[in-house]
Length: 302
Image 1 (cartoon, rainbow, N blue to C red):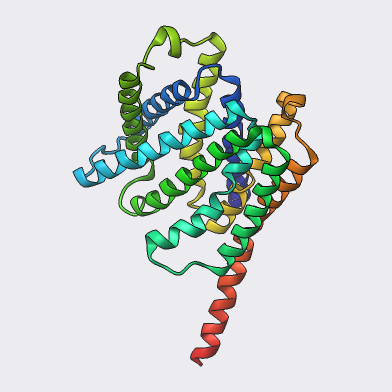
Image 2 (tube, rainbow, N blue to C red):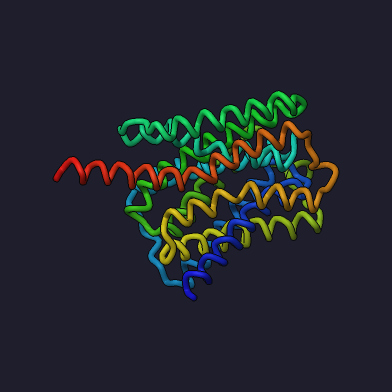
């Protein structure tokens, strides 16, 4: 019963993450302004959560600087992701974000100094085929696709770096300092570029305020905490498999909410199906590959 309850929570969390892209389309301010608001709302929410838990906010100076650096990557990722949505569609941005598996397969071995997996290469090739298909049939969204892929690379980088940090610090504390650091860096950038102007760039409608609070509190802070909590009971394999459904949930929500404006060509859906199927099947294939290697090792050691 506990397992099914946590599995339901995980699916609900992934749906909420998919809804993030919908909110990005609904919020009227630019991607820079949207992210500026998102990170400060989420950081405040996480600070309140940490105080409620009476958790220590202490981190070493070394970790603090690293967290600020990772926070900058997170912030840039969100800016690129939401800008991709605003100049293309929710569906395009989400499918591009699915290519994280490809970039992780390439970059993680470089960071961890391990060999590149043949399975990672195979899945990467399939993702490239899918994205090439999307490029071919959705040429009007070329810039949005490129920026969406850049967002995917940034997401891959901060996930790799966070995998190291989470071994030393509390995940919620990590998220708080990353978001707070990202907000400070973005504030400095907006001030230096003249974008930091409430009247011109940061003015919000009443609906924007509601959507931003939902984005910052529910889709970022709460979803993050719940996502971490269910990992205590579910296997990493289950979490990876369900998380890969985010673009599927997101595209379905976009079609239901935005209807005709989110309808794409048949070629797009063929390419998207190749990408999403490759990503969704990856944990299953990875698990079987590792089990096969383990069997071979045990057989050779007898």
